[in-house]
Length: 310
Length: 310
Image (cartoon, rainbow over all chains, first blue to last red):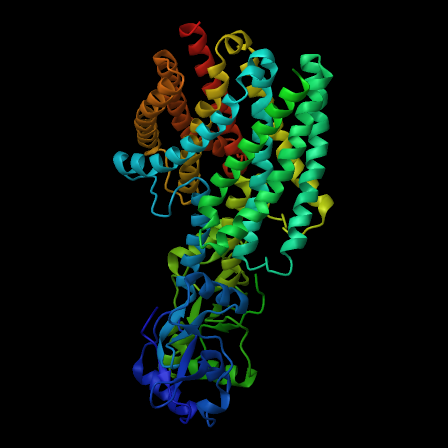
């Protein structure tokens, strides 16, 4: 927030304002409007410089000022401020306290930084990094920061391993299962991440609401099933041909369809649940999702293989 | 670009400009400066509204205008325009052709959209989506767009499966290998993605240059090796205890160290190589990297297991 704000009273004429500015000799950078306040510093409205320059100088500030302007409450979140600026194409906006007393102004250059940081945050979060992460930081802090995410990933990888270990008998008998199981897990992870990314963005842009979330869930599940059936067909043919065994093709196809269904459901549900629990889905969403798709994909494929191939 | 630009001549007095604006009765939105041009429409400089309001009205535009202002060439890339706005905290800038003829102006609200799109692009690219991707698009286009990335992923997953299939003999004899192999692949993928994300951001911000790229590669390899040795120790103990076999612990530890070394190297090298080849690393980097870490991780683990455990 800038506190170098020029304020004027509603009852003075534009001619007085013009003479005041000329006497001042300087206007704070990125000023596009003067703030109009009452005697006790309550915010009333804005006098855009363009209005000042184009109106009759005999008129008073009160005659020409803009009253219904957007203003920023002092306790508003950065992202909400950015949204107001974007929606109304503002260059600057007044900041007021709860009694509407003028505290200062926020200018667009601060908002640009917020938007830039938000984009950064989302990209870095997906790799388990935080905004302070610096490519040029010394080795030790870099190692320590990145170790955290590797540790979390290790736990989920061991969970997937534990699932696989329950099917040791099947793996010993049909070695093709071990060869193919990563295909099921990875297709689910990719499909789920696509849905997750879009839902997280939709939430950030305020597009996802109570009224459309069921529609969204249905749509994503249909997309997941369509891609599931389509790619299941390709995978079934490829593996049946590769291992010269139609049954293994059918088993992997069923596992793919199940996993892409679960991926679509999780991709919508995880960010919605995390938002309710006040967890940032940009950070935690991806690891939870891939854990689910790994475990479901492996359990479905190995389970079906145990039933139908042995 | 806006073409509703107010231009004035350098030789007129501010008083004339003020009377001209008042006669006009309106100034285009987001105008913070008037453009100063010569008789043949060549751009000369800017007259900020704040200067117009605070200077002696007897002076000419040429006396008070700002000459050394940033301007935008008509063929400049969006991202470079955004960078100029951010560096100089501009609200608007003139757009000129190659002969310095004034074509119009770009205002900060357009730049905000570019920055927002850039952040979006990076986030969506990592999930294999493009900027046009819409959460609320109909089912068929959504399915088709996402299918492409799933297909690419399927090819890489089958490549990993092919690597595994070369070790069928080992998998039949030591089933623990099938249980654990995903841990090696996934740790490499995570570590590599962290490095990749930071290098892509560093490139976008212009932080990575010819002079520091060797330093960067060395640093990332040291970070990769430190995390490799650290987590290898944890994994070695866990698996040795789980399968009651020290040799399997040592083999997986060695594979983890190799894969995290390769992940760090690839995380730096892939975006640098892609940039040279004019490929956007935000889109293609992640899939190439995880293909490498999957194949190297699986080959290292299964290869070492074949040598030392059979």
